[in-house]
Amino acid sequence: MAVLNYLLGTVRVELRCKYSERAVNICAVNHVDFRDLVRGKDGAAEMTVGLSGYVTLRRVAKETGAFTVRLIRRRGAPFFLWRIRKRYVLLTGMAVCLMLIGLSTVYVWQIDVLGNVTVPTSEILAALRSEGVDIGTCVLDIPARQVENDMLLKVPKLSFITLNNHGSRLEVIVREEREKPELFDPDVPTAVRAKKGGIVASVTAREGWTLVKPGDTVAAGDELISAYVPLGTGRTVHATGSVRARTWYELTASMPLQAVKKEYTGEKTVRRAIILGGKRINLYISGGNPYGSCDKIISYTDTVLPGGAVMPLSIVREEYEEYNEYPYTVSAADAERMLRSELLYELERELGDGAVVTADYDIISDGELVTVTLRAECLEEIGTEHALSERELSELSANNKIETE
Amino acid sequence: MKRKKGAIMRAAEVFDVPGQPALGVPRVTVTGHSRVHIENHRGLIEYGPEIIGVSAGDMTVRLRGRRLEISAMSDMELVVTGDISGVDLEA
Image 1 (cartoon, each protein chain N blue to C red):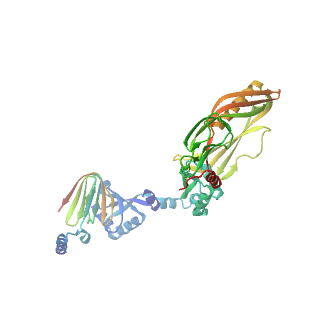
Image 2: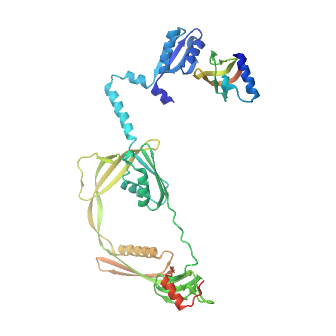
Image 3: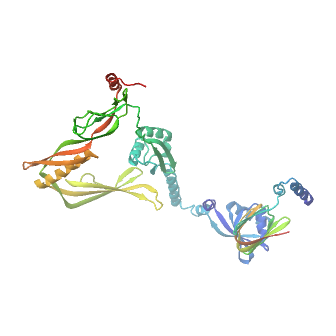
């Protein structure tokens, strides 16, 4: 309301009359809306009226002669503009400023992605960019419904997306697709087979017919728990259970003893640029690499207002740090230690829930290259469920007279 | 006119309907201790920081308090704000 009053302009006036109540009532009768009425000095009425009210008041005062009007204060945009009417440069500046503010509201300066949990914001922003929606895009050029449909195809993990435009801020609300849990279907004939070769250490069948026992040697793909249970007239089931086996691994890695080491010279060059509405403006003249060998570190700083609103202006800082390369000799012992730990890490990553029982290392060093071979015995789960195909099922039915329901 | 008003008011009472909309009977709405809204007034009688008197046709509405101020006024409505301690209706 205060903004509207300022835009329309208000006048504080003093009505002087023998009985100021009478002047106030004349105002009310003549539809002069006023506010903040107080009794001023010498019993005069002080009130605030609008511009049109002030004109009416002057007319009524002149026609009736019942009271006099004295202007105390003028306030508002009309008076300000009237005061600066001959300052053309200032008026032009204000007009340009208002035009820029008006124009800025039709461009996207900030994109907020809300509701994503597993899909990274960067992936959503990249997909939006490929649809032509980015910082600096004109809001009027965004076909929201089409972008929403295309985004669902481009990012399949999204089940819902909507684009809401709040002035120069684009709010992207997404909902992710819930993955269907893997259901255990007891009616699907399934066998447990070996995914790796090894010697069986233990077998626990929860459903199905056990085909192996501890101490048996199995190869990858061998059936460990059958889907066919030969009890009574025989039937097929969804076999499930745990088969742990001793397995063996051999991993090899090499490392040269000659390496290159970086040493910084202390020379640095910093270049700056600004990104205004998606357009980069370099604040330096000469581009290119300032040194022969150097590291380049780029950092972006967004400009944020005290309220948290991000402005469409980012400052880019590029730091070039010169270094020289020197040949460096790694000791054989250090190379061996590094290779051992890397091989063990790789083995444990491959085993998952399994465990390393024993590990032996073979080291070969010829002065230039160190090669380490890891031979390990492990204990791990090798059983994996395998749904029987139609052909496998018909073969099983032919070999065993299975009862059909 | 007064007789006509009286007849309409009696009829309104018989039929149990509010007579105010037709007759322009004043309505005084008090909000807490800080605001009084008067509709269908007939003008100010007196005003000051401690007392404001408003004509409401057959009666006078007198507001008492401290720092009283007429925040807004038109030919039909009037809003008084301040620390209001009493509202008197004088016939």
